[in-house]
Length: 157
Image (cartoon, rainbow, N blue to C red; front, side, top):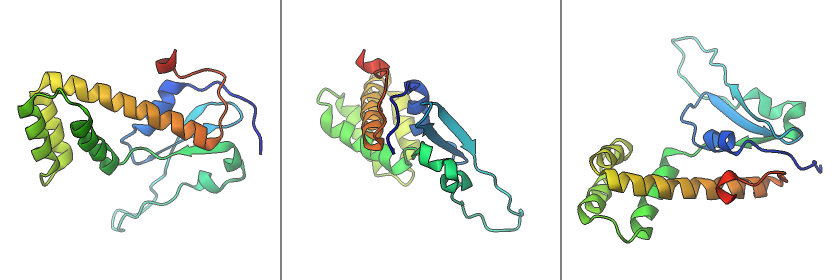
């Protein structure tokens, strides 16, 4: 099915990829370009073991007009940290060593955040690098979905 070009709220789309809320399901409406959020309902009894269900909206008749966003997983984010350490040459040696150790720790997500909080300059470099990767991911996803945009991403203007 071919859709007309749409205007995308790039910031909202970026936020959808960066969402940490497992109960939120994000999608782009291919007809309007609107980035929308649905909340998955958890209707289990407190005694039942929790198993996340696929959102019903993915299988509704309107789902042909919806392009669903899969948020970044913790594993993907940690892979980016590893690539950051390989790609960025001018990192302070102590920062780089601490980041490598954090990635090898039992709880790498928390350990990486702890290291970032101790090294403000490294933290700034990381967030710039991370933003670039996120922008690349969002743009590639839009292309992969076949969404034609009327407006370019703000980071390209």
